[in-house]
Length: 136
Length: 110
Image 1 (cartoon, rainbow over the protein chains, first blue to last red):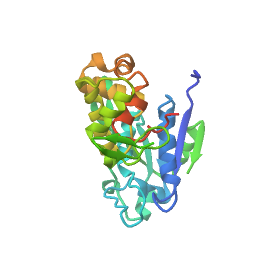
Image 2 (image 1 turned 90 degrees about the horizontal axis):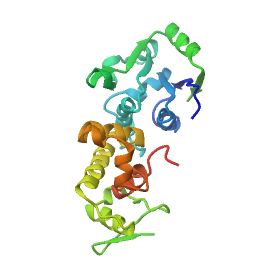
Image 3 (image 1 turned 30 degrees about the horizontal axis):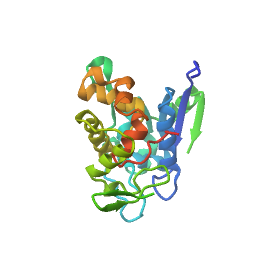
């Protein structure tokens, strides 16, 4: 394994179903995280719908993979940035999203929040800070 | 190639993973283990059942690293290492145990 740990940012901008982008992104994230990379996720535009609670895919005939986002904590993915403006433009708030957490092994497995709401301006800084940005 | 369990036939993919996770019953694991010359103990079943619970909750099979950590937390620190898991499942906990559990091949497992 390479000794250089790069910061990977996975940018999610599309609705969860209708295209394969959201699921493909999540699979790549899980694979990348299994290789000890520094992984963060960002959700903006229609991508914020990927994290919403209570998804039901019975009508569209696609697998409901929304439960898998809750596994991200197990994969040491602790930084999930959600753009405030994208939520507001769609009439959504943090309460409409799944409560995603990671467990801190060094703090008696305390659950800590993974989702961080950021403004559009802060999001550009998040992107600037990443070594590699994958856009889905 | 389908496998025969208690007179019933179960479809599998080309790598021997169960085609339909909902078809699974404990006999499937027994038959698969027998083909590998492995006797399933309670310790094997702990892992198999845990994998099924994990899939039920998250809709994916966990990566080995994730499984190892979770096993250590749930069944004791002495078991949360790959030596213990490979001792139980010599072909690899993810590939062999997931197959016995009727799960698809873990994401990222080549």
